[in-house]
Amino acid sequence: MFVRFVVHKIDSNSGRRQGLFQAVQALEHYGALNIQDAKYLDAICGWFSEHLEEPARQAISSRHHGRKQALSWFKDTATNHIAKMRELAEMLERYGVPVEMIKAKRLGYILYEDEFQVAAYPFSDTPT
Image (cartoon, rainbow, N blue to C red; front, top):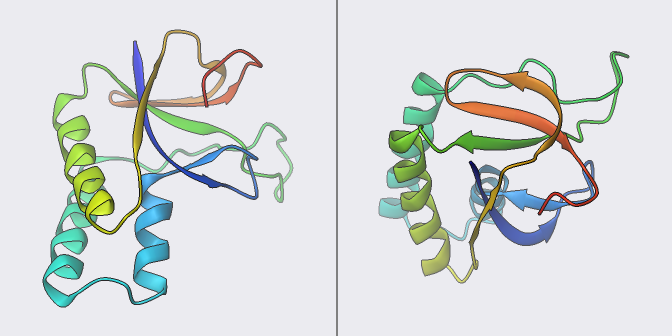
């Protein structure tokens, strides 16, 4: 089983709902966060920087400028990562950004995989 956290805003590259890191960036960009919350989110994002690789491939095309359309999912065994995502979700919801956790067994065409996550171009019946 795989887990993904999403918000309602649609990503321009994938055409699917954005993940939480994009939602956090939007709050930071618009200056919506108070100082304490900004520091807290920076700490969580810093934890992810140390404990999660950025997928090496996110585009189906092997061309240098291919559109990044892969969706990142956590493996259900990545319990620490999922717990940190729940913390991000709680903070986003406090700022009026609804978050949904979706689960799937069939993700799509796998473009990247490591110990904690999978990046996949979704099948038509994959929840996104």
